[in-house]
Length: 352
Image (cartoon, rainbow, N blue to C red):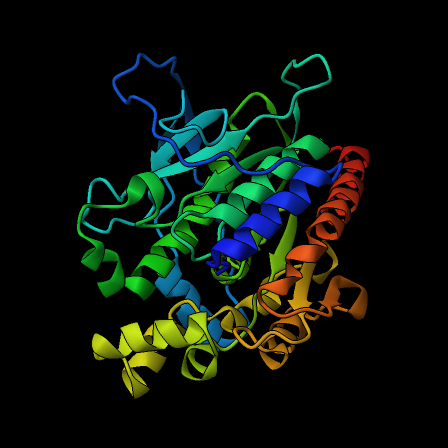
């Protein structure tokens, strides 16, 4: 949700000066007619949702699942200057919009000092609500220098999935989130078939809006090996109703669509993380929260942390708000690297 131009420039400066990563490239489209080298792989949904002890969780899961099937994953030259390759696959949930139903991921390759692509663990990155997806791209472009292939997935109606009519995504905001949950979960299986990825360890990272989507997606069946959530929380209805700044803007847009009161509660419950977050493995999940966040207040962050059963060492509380937390990005990158290396070491020792 970092939409301020000043804030974005601060992020870029911080990351560019750090030894952990590089700033995101400026937006620039590439000629789509240019010949592209394509590689095509066949993947299959590994979705395996087990019955939950909670009746409410089962109702939520029923509304989020889909029939597993095989699907095609295409790797091609990017259509913009973002990422080294573009990975695409069909959405697991149809919106009825052919353009939106092709999921795109910007692949940031991990290379050694000689510039050679290396096999390495992967991280699927889910961006914030800003249309430029700047923070998601900074995570992806920075973490790839720490030893990981990163894939920044574009949520419904973002990036290459954005249709000509802006009204379409505003009118289907929570429907799009439900589709996004499925896409993020399917992304794990799409990434796993790419030869350069060491599929023993595939993790998920999401920021703000992406954090909410990631929390729900990771809770479906626990197939992601690690989960890193930034500025996310529980009780979407409360956040939309009472949150400041970006949450307040969302509240105004939704009210214009008639989504208030019980109607708003009903649509938020479809993708509410706390209905299923107890299914996530608390030993392989981390939450980074701002103590002074008024968009996703600490009470909502604590609600999510409690739902996952995170201990204090897995809930990192930063003396920041929803925007000033940018100064902690280098620390977050380093922390993710440490946890990813530990997860991968454990996976190798277990022979997974």
